[in-house]
Image 1 (spheres, rainbow, N blue to C red):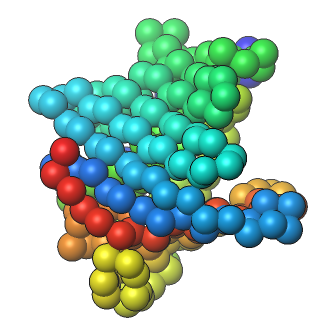
Image 2: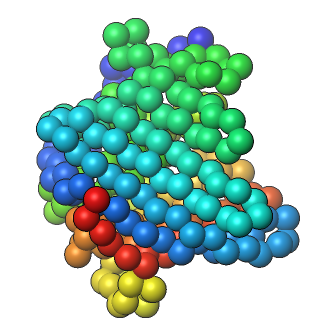
Length: 229
């Protein structure tokens, strides 16, 4: 097990208030590039909140490549989302478990457990955590604000920092939207580039996301429809 100080909370967390978006299904168009080959796909993200219990699922579907889905389940709290399990499935599923009674994260993959930090999110819940934070705490919408927290994948956990960049008006499949852009601040040389455009009109949920790997692979998603689940 990797040790760390799991009692240290991000400084912003003590000032945060959260307004959770209502249950919603967001439909996206996906465009990607892998090993120099461009492709398109469709997919969606489903967010449901029942009392304090939440479920999140995102699925990307491609006719030839198949589908990949990510799931996050847990509870909401005054200090944000508290994920319990994160699953990432492509052909087979790998999962991370947030064992809060032991203050660590365990993985179904053959990787060591890591200490669980206060405010930790998974690769999917981070989108709703940011949305609810910005909806409930307008002071964090100012350009230059930085928001950092532990982000958990199916194999590991590391601290990510996001910087609030600027407002941008985007022309998307759903129409023209005013958005607030956030970017991941690279802390190491080969960190993923993550850019998120959040839509205040839709509870600050993502209208566009762009993720680029150091090897040149890119995946982008663009909001096309919003449905009541």
